[in-house]
Amino acid sequence: MTDITRVYGSGEAEVRALDGVSFDIFPGEFVSVMGPSGSGKSTAMNVLGCLDSPSSGGYLFNGVDVAALNHDQRALLRRHYLGFIFQGYNLLPRTSALQNVELPLIYKGIGREEREARALAALDKVGLASRAHHDPSALSGGQQQRVAIARALAGEPQVILADEPTGNLDTKRSVEIMELMVELNQQDGITIVMVTHEEDMAEYGKRLIWMVDGKVEYDRLTTRAA
Amino acid sequence: MIWETFKLALQSILRNPMRSFLTVLGVVIGVASVIAMVTVGNGSTAQVTADVESLGANLLTLQPGQDRMGPGNDDGGAARPFELDDVDTILKQVSSISVAVPTGSRQAVVIYEGENYQTSITGTMNGYLDATDWPLSDGRLFTSAEEKGRSVCIIGETVREELMGNADPIGQKIRLESLNCTVVGLLESKGANTFGLDQDDIVLMPFTTFARRIAGSDDVSSITLSVREGYSTDRAIDDLTALMREVRRIDEGEEDDFSVRDTEQLANMLGSITSVLTGLLSAVAAVSLLVGGIGIMNIMLVSVTERTREIGIRMAVGAQASQVLLQFLVEAIVLSALGGLLGIGLGLGMGAVGASMLNVPFAPQPGVIALAFGFSAVVGVVFGYFPARAAARLDPIEALRHG
Image (cartoon, rainbow over all chains, first blue to last red; front, side, top):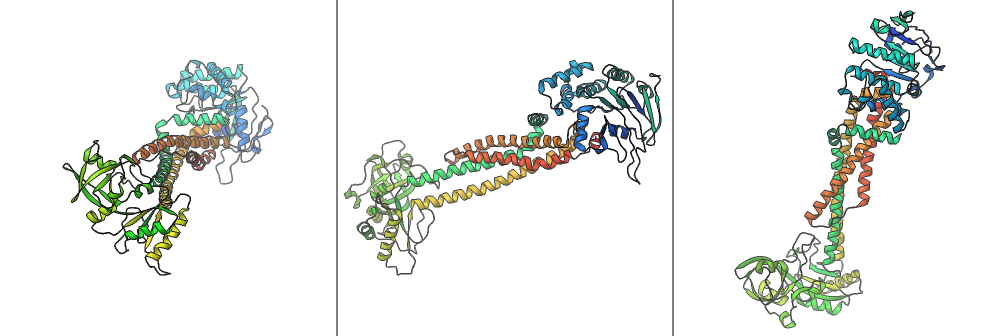
């Protein structure tokens, strides 16, 4: 993963969610994005996650100009390189943990046996192999988020994008989740970009980008990295 | 991928079995009614054909008047009846006719040892049983002496049962109005005819006896004829018509005041009535299938809204719009195809019950079953496409934020 620059403005009279934002994220980084509500950090995540495309400016992902890709091409990019973790977990209801984790693998076209094995391995990594056949509603919030992390992992992404992953969790669970994220970053070399508004969670990253009003206010190393 | 999509569709259908069932209920009922209608309709048509053939394959009936509706309709007094001489004339002059017998009938009460029973008395001759291909199960035909006016009769199975149960009727005396007559023969049972009339509910007696003692006149209300083996029915009808016009002195250009009915014509007429009815009922059933499709579309649209977040998640993990479209489309198709299968089962069941209730053969049509099933799948495609497209067009960000 190399070189990302991106300027994004949405029309003339429109709200400029992102107003000339530029930064690079390098492979293996753990970046925390912070800022007050409406600062554009979620929009930045959507663009990074190829869910949204900038109205102007360029975004290079592994040297590919994402702004020039159509919907389906961006879906392919998400499928093969990206993993998502959301604040609200976003697991499919009435579907077992295992099946939830298998979801990205289905779209990768992986056969049933290998899919199950890989999903189980991912669940094992987050310490939930024993809950593979539980319904999300039978799991605690922390467990659900770990299933979501397993789902993001199963697709073997280069980058995991986490949008307030600890927003709904108490401190103890949050710490567990963050430690898991650090582990993924350090041991598996997965690049992590995380939006959060909790300073102590942001400190788990190595680098902090602070956004205000659609602009990058500052971009520094965290105390942990320093 | 298709197989995966199919399994996914099945999963999400089974996740909510009650709702899925209610969703396809319309299609189930639609398919079931089409199949039941066609099955029973075909059974009726087959039954009608068989019934008419049982009347006697070469049977013709000559009746006064032009009324062409169902048998047993004794045409209004306006038309002149035939005379006994006409019967002889026909036998002498029309070579294509092998049997011609006068026939008259009338309702009357029959009494036997205190049992009363209202039945139909038919005055005719032995030839009637040849023409109608109707054998005796017991006893004998009329002797020629009896045909000249003796008080004897041949009874149908129903009359025997009503009056004497299972007892042997031969030689018993029964009373018809003021006439005492001896039973000499028992007709083989024919069952109900196409119109539901019990053909065994009959007493036959020599025409002369009937004319003198029951009807009180020599008028012949109809003549039953049989076409000679090897002659065409059309030819016989033409010859007969020409002769009768002459005998009844009908001027050229004037309409016949009599009519000849043949069994084939009857079969065609009844066949066309049943097929029109079957067609109509099937059309109504097909409309209900369409309504069922709209039901599926409705639920699928609701489902798209309910599952917006699911669609967002799928898109986030890399599903393309076309894959989401396919998923919802396949779901609708699988749903309505399952409905179709249920409908086929139900329809065949209803058809079997209906056929046995109406006493017609159970005649399922594989072609119609395949068609109804195919149609239900098409309903899935047509009515599933719109909701599926709505799902595929969702913006992943909006979809994820939903709910």
